Length: 121
Image (tube, rainbow, N blue to C red; front, side, top):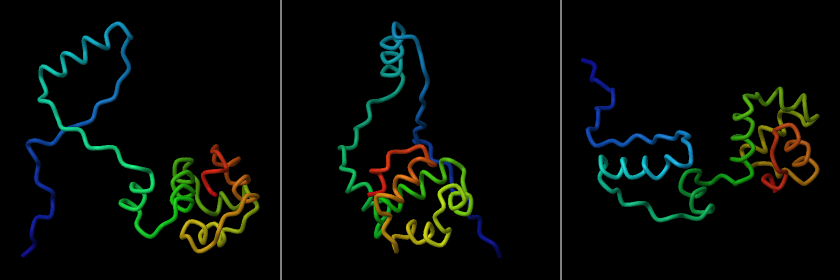
């Protein structure tokens, strides 16, 4: 007998909304939201290091950044290799934290991925 694996709906689940309004309407909309939604306790801010260690344990910031930026640009490792001249095998090793990126490679990657090269160092 198969068991249902679909996640049950949670009644108190909140949805994040982001939209643009004219500056003169911003305060009015904030007040309206305060009236219809109960105040939520905000989470304490965390450092970037804590975020990476919590969400990407055992992975370097450079490796996660490389994978994330490549994904953001909707690019495969093969395509990134073609555009940068860095072998695909090396890109895979960099994304898995098995190879350091280095300044020259970081500059090549940053140019293709529309990012600051210092993210990879």
